[in-house]
Image 1 (cartoon, rainbow, N blue to C red):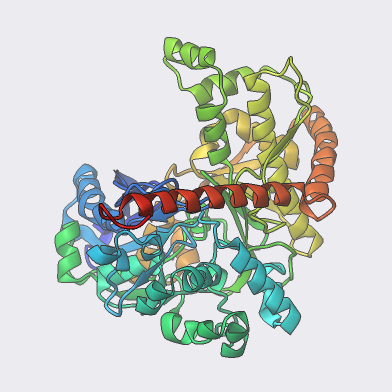
Image 2 (cartoon, helix red, strand yellow):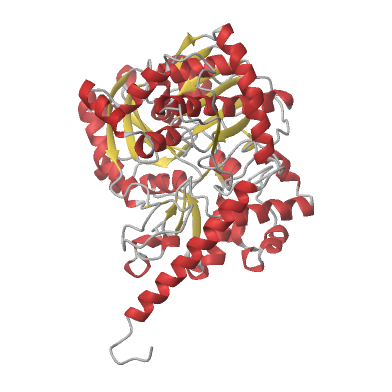
Amino acid sequence: MSVNKSGPGGQDSCVVGIDFGTLSGRALVVRVADGAELGSAVCEYRHGVMDAELASTGRPLPPDWALQDPADYLDVLRTAVPAAIDLAGVRAGQVIGIGTDFTACTVLPVLEDGTPLCEFAELAARPHAYAKLWKHHAAQPQADRITEVARDRGEPWLARYGGKISSEWQFAKALQLLEEDPDIYRLAKRWIEAADWIIWQLTGTETRNACTAGYKGVFQDGHYPSREYLAALNPDFAGFADEKLAHPVLPLGSRAGSLTVRAASWTGLPEGIAVAVGNVDAHVTPPAANALAPGQLTAIMGTSTCHVMNGSHLSEVPGMCGAVDGGIVAGSWGYEAGQTGVGDIFAWFAEHAVPPEYHAEARRRGIGLHELLSEQAARQQPGAHGLIALDWLNGNRSVLVDHHLSGAIAGLTLATRAPDIYRALLESTAFGTRVIIDAFEAAGQPVSELIIAGGLMRNELLMQIYADVTKRPLHLVKSAQAPALGSAIHAAVAAGAYQDVPAAAAAMVGKIENAYTPDPRAAEVYDQLYAEYVLLHDYFGRGANEVMHRLRALRDRVLGEAEKTQQAEEKDHDKPVGAEK
């Protein structure tokens, strides 16, 4: 379908896609007619990820916490959007719509008017008043209970999520809030995904999108879990969905509202232009690759990896993050799986486990440490390092859905060096992706293509390993900023320039076919290594050996006791002079 030339701006019309990531937000200006990317700008979050201490007080946070300050998201609107327009060299009046995407589940407590609770001075020291980032995993006990009660009651929606509910999702995080800070829970009149909150800020209208509601909010067949089920979790939780989530769920690509005067002043864009319904960074990416047909699996590879794919029919895939009708595009069942740590694992190793001489060599040569490690690891033949690793340094999202699992490396010797371990970690994430592909296919959802998006597709060694491990050619998304492009596509549809998302994707994007193809000799070796990976995966992950859970429980107990001791000491120190000890 051709672009609608009768719309505002005609053939010169542009849209803005805004990708709110883990550490920053990116604005991208895109021409509606052909998808040309005209300019982009990035705004780093001032507060970043609060996973060690609360920025407002400096007080340490417990293990597995990850918070954000929503003020950082507004900074993106004020700085990145005007900068991108300026760099694109277009007039603000040419912009006919805005689309956004967000990490998920990133969720926050707010008042009826959308004001985040952390904005209030008297609540700024309360961790539960802040946005809980997608990788906040401290709600694992609540997630376990959510799954157990649903299984005991025979809740039909549980199978749509592979039989387990993640600690990353809305209900687990909300139940943790209720049980750990009931005052904040009562003050929160809405429990809202950041994907929907930012649309509220842009339009002045509260909305809910089909993607986050379906995948992260357990919204299936037109409703949330029943009051009876929620009461079985906690009597005070019975009204959670009715009171804090209730709002019409809108389809992806539709118009959420119009840009308000206030938001126009932030962005420098015209008041009244279309704002698309919110979306998730991973699920907005398949349109940016024109990968919307059933079986086209898109892996968005960054700090974590999300695997999303459309299917023509409903299947129950064990360990999946969700199967949602219209979760990626209307008319198809959208499937999601993922790995909670990928780029984060490589970054952890480079920052904390690489000897100084490698850092020195990288500086001497003027290259990045990852580039040096990849270069040296690429000299090895598959299997030459004698290692196998489990990619669970941030837990397991799929297919085990257990964020209390942890990483492991087998085969270490005194001869093992940093590039050996680095390559083993790269390979471990490829093995994790193959487990996901195997799970899809075993459940009757064939994977016909593997398309890669995200920053990690720039690592040539990693891409070749993925091709060899999965024994599939890799197609690459042309855009280096695929989520923002996907959001721009949705903006074009919301503005009326295209009939629907598939039509816009066909006109505005493309992919690099067969960018990497499998090496048969390497694939044969990786088949052997994959068999060992699966053996360890099942041994440590499916209950045969609970050592990882025992270690986690011991750690939490020791740290908890230390925190209680510190709090007691601080309380004692703060007593007035002369007070009884």
